[in-house]
Each structure stands twice: as C-alpha cells, then as structure tokens.
Length: 446
Image 1 (tube, rainbow, N blue to C red):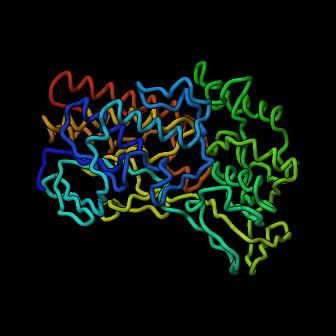
Image 2 (cartoon, rainbow, N blue to C red):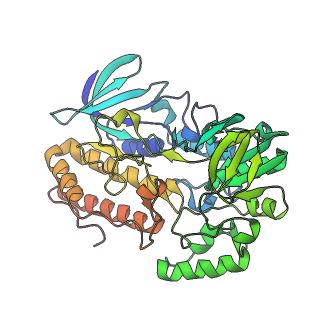
Image 3 (cartoon, rainbow, N blue to C red):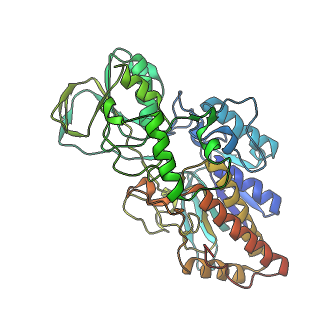
C-alpha cells in the first residue's frame, strides 16, 4: 500500500490510544496497528511478553494518573489494580471510538525513512506500506535485562516478565533480585506464599508510603505549588525519617542517593514483611553454586526459585535499522520525544516521578499539531522541528540529580516535562494560527 498522506501509529496501548484521539481531533489521516488481540498494551495479562502480573497496581494515584480530559472513575480506589487499569484504558478507547480504528494482530517489523521524507513500513506476513510519518507508541518495558553472575543456578529461574501469580511461590524457597517497584511487589507476593522469601538489592533506595496525612502521597505533594528540589528534598527526607525510619534495621542497605534522585519505591508493605520476618533482605548476589546463592555480605541461601526483577531495556525493535542505538538505554530522544528523523516521533518512551498518562496526552497533542501542520506546509514544519532539535537540549530534571542508570537515561521530572510540553504546544499553536510554520520554538526553558 502506498498512502504517503497518512500517518502510522504503532501500538494501541495508552500512548497509541492517546495519539489516536489527538489525530482524530486534529483531522489528520492515520492508521493504527497493534500486534496483540486487543487494545490495552502491557496492562492486558493475555498479551505475550507483558511485564504485568496479577497483583500489580498503579504506583501513582488515580487523581493524577488519568488521560487529559478523562479522569479515572471516582469509585476507583486510590491505587487501582491491574484489572481496573485495563478497564479504564479500554473505556477511554470506547469513549472516543478508538478501538474501531485499530488493526489488531498486525505487527510492524521494520520502518525505514525514504529520501522523499516518507516511511517504508514492513509488516509480519503482509505487504509493506508507505506512510507520511510514523508514531512509535510501543512502550519500553518489553525487553528484559538479565544480570550476569559467576556460576550457575540448578533450580528454576526466570525474569519477572514471566511472573504472573503468587501461586508460583507455593512451598518454595524464593529469591527476588532487584530494587524497583516490581521487585518489591513480587517479594510481597512471595512473603505470603513461599516457604522462605529473600529480597536481594544491589543498592539502597528510599521507600515512600502510599499515603501521607490521609492523602495519596503524590496528591499530597502536588496539591500546592511545585517545590524546587532544594526545598522538596529536605522536606521529604525529614518526613521519611519520621514515617519510615532507618532502613538498615530491616536489613536493607542505606540509600546511596538523596530522595527523588531515583525512581520512587512506592511500597512500604515490604517493610512490614521484613519487620515480621516473612521476608529477609540480602545485599547483591556475588556467585551462584547449584541451589546455593552467595551474597556480598558472606552469607548464603539454599533456594528453589530465583526471579530476576532486574528491569528492561527501552528498545524499539522495528526502528533499530533507522535509529542509532545507545548501549542498553535505547535511542536518544530530544525532549523525550524527537529522535531526530523527519516525521518520526516516539511517545511514552520515558520514565517520570508522576503519572505517565497526563504527559503522554500532551505528547500526543503536540505531535498531532505537528502532523496537521506538516499536511499543509511540510518543508516549513520539518525545518521547525530540525531547528528545535538542533538547539540546546532541554533540562527535564527539574534540578534533580538522578542516579546514573539505564532507567534514568530517559527520565523526566513530572512538572518540568509537563511545562516543557505545554510551552511547545503553545508555540506551535501560535505558529499555526499565523498560517504555515515559519520559525523554530524558543530554546526550552526560556
């Protein structure tokens, strides 16, 4: 198929659906394809390769996690579980008649830019197509990272991407390796079912309670004016000393960074299990020896099962031939959105300390405006984007010095990124109101 006037949206998870709504509102011609059987992305447990599990919940609260203009139902709990999140995503799709536009069971295998500015798109088991532009909205939690340790483990081991149910731990001696929210969730599941539960963390983290003074933590801290890190960090540090205390008494390592400088661990339930002896904390693994695992503190454990909750690489397989790869941390994106090729945008490929859906909604609005402009003045619109991305890179940290890790390579502080996207939307809107786009946006942060 050769339809160089249409855009292709790849993925019908939250980012792809937000983009579809924005493209419909802007009256930009598009197709949307999804390799799975229905819309929903990672929140559909039936999708092969999803990192989701039965006990998963949102770690941002419902009040700050909805799509723009489509809040989560008031009847939802503060932190909705996986079935409710999936129900909400599909309700959003149905409210805006998005599901009827999705071609399901269609997988993009490669997208390649052409000399005329269009994109050649190859599909598994189908004829190739040509599009005006491509929106990659496939998420970044599909490519699991496996750690390497000396020796071998003779029991059962698998990455957390394969984990689904607490029943997998029944009557087993279990080790969970990892320090993120998923690792802590899974360790909590194991603590209720396993014969022994061990949680191994390579570094220390800050554990934030999900409620502060009767309110969801994110809603409490975002209910007033945004506080700079110089103010927020000491406030949070003092609050955690009062509410959580010294983590070393649970056997956990002390954090090696200040609060907010790593993705928040919104889970103090694991501290409950550690305090009651239902789980045991260990430092990093140093060696595997049959069923025995050796830890950095010199202790060992005889185990039946290891779950590697060690994260994901933010890769986009169908763009690997088009985008330079940064080792382990995915493509480099200007403003967590622009990969530097004409008419190619990557949505939802970032991490933040707040809900993703409000930010994805703004990404989608911005991209739809650019696609709409490209339909009338393609050369001017592409020059605008080229000048923007050739300028100073926006500082999306909000003044927070994030730890150096794969996860934080594409990290954006919520209020900072929200303001950046809003500023670009206003600038594009002003240009469109004048006719064809003529000049680049102001330097981000101005």
